[in-house]
Amino acid sequence: MRRVAITGIGAISAAGNNLSETLDAFWHERSNLGSVSLFSTTLTYPVFEIKGVDVGKYDKGMRTLNLALRAVREAIDDAELQNDLQEFKVGVCLGTTVASQLNDLEFYRAYRSGKNVSINSVDRFLKGNLSEAVGRKIKASGPFATVVNACSSGTDAIGVALSWLRNGLCDIAIAGGADELNLIPFCGFASLGVLSDSLCAPFDRDRKGLNLGEGAGILVLEAEPVARQRGRNSDLFLCGYGLASDAYHLTAPHPEGVGLEAALRRALSEADIAPGDVCFVNAHGTATQDNDKIEGKVLNRVFGPDLTFLSTKGFTGHTLGAAGGLEAAFTAAALRKKWIPASIGFKNQDSTISIAPIMKKTTLSGNFAVSTSLAFGGNNSALVIEKRGHHT
Image (tube, rainbow, N blue to C red; front, side, top):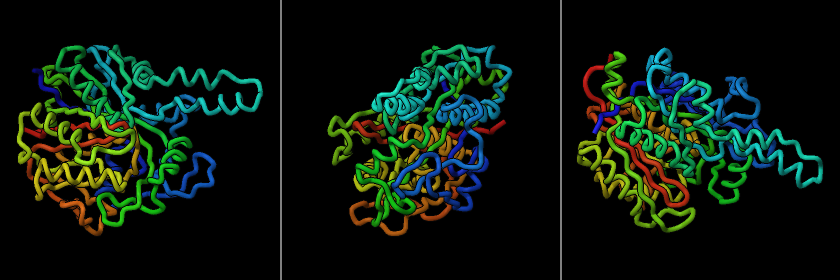
């Protein structure tokens, strides 16, 4: 089985317009929660909206694509891949949920009003294949695949890309997730009663729900021989992926977390490590009642009561299809930097959750970390990332 190196990382979210800005926000525990300005609404729930950067200069009405492209280009630069894109077989696998397909709002508003309907929004809908659009922009050869699997989409896209590389379908893969803030999920999550009117508090006793966010997180993955051929001796490797479904409920996790536990154990098995080898877990941690209770229960069952873990949702909000990509990027960066930020928002332990996330920046000493994603529909995914050797 070919080893897969992580040679490039890119990230954009409300925490920062690139990875460096994001890590600075993490270090200083800076949260940029604010009111929504992208669309008109009578709802007053705060969000993590990206501001102060132009994400509309590429293609009108394609915010998710623009976010993805910014993170992709940062990751490509980090991997020093720009001059090699046409020299190798480069695949693109990205996860998303709302993506550009919500441009059909314009179409349906006109249709329901009885007015003549412009096909412009339909054209944008048809161009909503995020991975293919990114692939065309960077002139990659493929394969291309877009994963739409609710809030685990970004993690699953990285898992698919890992299988491509291990099976020789491509030499290099650009993988992760991207999603924009949009009226439909904003109203939808409000209707479900899971939005908080203040900063989200993952795993906290008094958590009230999630804050929506937007962004993109991207990894450049390479078969290790290809990375060496290009002179990229990476210290980061993607070594495990697990996927399992609860098959229980459309929006609620299984009460015993059977799917998440199966996904975690498969990822650990694929990486050929024991739970005790993991130095931290970047948890999904949405600050909803059900997610945090079940995820906490499973993390304790798999890793034990002394586990070091956190949620970064207090910095980025829940970015839906981008969450897995962003959190994989953060996990890889944390292993390299040897520290993780505080799980901001957490203050008081919930008596129904037997473990608690860290409350301050923590130095790392281990080599393996896990990133988890849970999704509506009962999907559960996990990645194992390893740091080894010297970075050049």
